[in-house]
Image 1 (tube, rainbow, N blue to C red):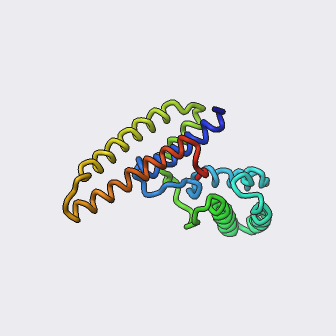
Image 2: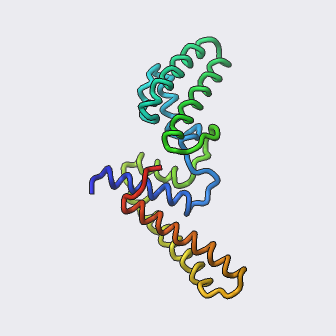
Length: 193
C-alpha cells in the first residue's frame, strides 16, 4: 500500500473517529480561524500570493477565489477597519468554496480553538511526521466503541416490548452503520471528507 493511500485511510479513520469517538461539538476544522485553510489564507495575504490557498478549492472555483483575493488586496490598503473586513470576506469566500468542494454546507467561520480533538490529533501527527501514536489511540478508541456498541445492541437483541425494541433498533442502527463506515474507510471505499 502506498504512503498516500495509508495517509488517506488514516485521515479518513481520524475523521470518522472524530465524529464517532471524540464527542466534540465541532468536527471540521477547515472553517476554524486557526485551522489550516485560514492559516494558508493569512500567508497568502501576507505574501501577496494566492498560490498557498488554491489547493483548498476546486479548479473551477480558482477564478472566483482569485478575483476575491485581488479585491481583498485593494480594499486592505484603505485602512485597518477595511483590512479586517476584507480579510474576513476573503476567509469566508475561501472556506465557503472549500466546504462546497467537500460537499459540506458552509455555516460561517468558527472561533480559534474550535477544532475537534480528532482534527487536532491528526494535525499534530502530521506536524510530528509520525502517525504511530495517533493510529494506536484510534485503534484503542475504535475497539472500545465497537465493543460498547455491540454490547448495547446485544443486550436488546431479544427485546419483547415496543419501547425496549425501539431502543434495540436505535443501538443496532448505530452499531451496524458505524461498523460499515469504519470498514469502508479502512477498505478504501470512501470519498474523502
